[in-house]
Length: 338
Image 1 (cartoon, helix red, strand yellow):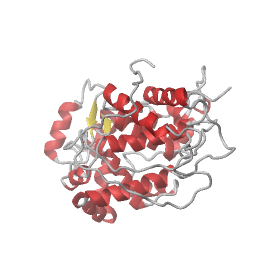
Image 2: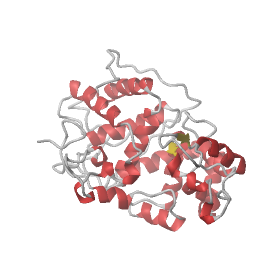
Image 3: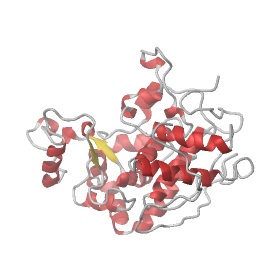
C-alpha cells in the first residue's frame, strides 16, 4: 500500500492525550456479536490493529478523524456492514448502478487507503478471517482512543455486505441543513434516540468539514445580506477568510472544534455554548430547547460525555449488522469476492 509500511513491533506508541476513561459496558446480547469473537481464529488481532493504526496516525494524523467519520457513515446506512467501502462497478453511470461511496454525502470521505492498509496487515497474520466491517469498527474505536478519548471494546463478528446502493447514501444520512425534527427522524430510522444524536455529534470534537458544508451560513443566509445569526460574528469573519465567497478552494477544510483540534474531549460542547458550532446542525443542538440541557451537561462533565459516547457508539455499531451466514468476509475491502 503506497505510503504505508508495517512495523515489526506490535507495541504502538500513543499520541499524547490529556486523560483517558476506561469503560466497560454490557450492552444487550446480540446473536453472534461478542468481544472475544476472534480470540481463537485471530488472537493477535488487536495487537495487529494497534500497530497498524499507529502507522496510519504517523503517516497522517488526519487519518484518525477520517476513519471515525468513515465508520459512522457506514454504520448509519443499512448498518455497519462495510458497504461504504465498496467501489462502483466500472462503467456505472446511473445512480441506481453506483455504490454508496459515490452518493453526494460521501464524496468528502477519505481514509479508504488506510482501511486497505489495515486489512492487508490483518490478512498477513489471519488470512480470510476478519471482515472489513469489523476492521473499520476497530479502527474507529482506536481512532477515539489514540486522540485521547475513552478506551472501549467493540463487539465483533460482523460480516461484509455484498451490496452497496447509491440511493441509500442519499436517503439515510443526516445532513447539516436538517432541522431538529428531521434529525430526530433520521436517527430514529437507525434505532437511535435524540440523546444519541447529541452524543454522537460529539465525535466532531476531532472532525473537519469542507467549506461547502457551511459557507451558506457566512453569506446571504436565508436570502439576507448577513451571516447566520446563531454563529458568533467573530468566528464568522474568520471563516470567511478560510472560505472566501469567490474562488474558494473546494478541498479546503475547517476543524469543527476550534479549541482543541486534535484532542477527543468535550470542547465541542463548550464551543456550542459560545455560538461557535461550525455546522448549522451542530449549533442547533444548543439553540433547540429540547437538547440544550444535554449540551450543557457534556460541556461541564467530560466523563459523562465519554460514558455516553461509548454507549451510543456501541449501540450504533450493533444496529442492523450482518452475522453468521449473512454476507461474506471480503478479500479486499473495495470489492466483493468473486
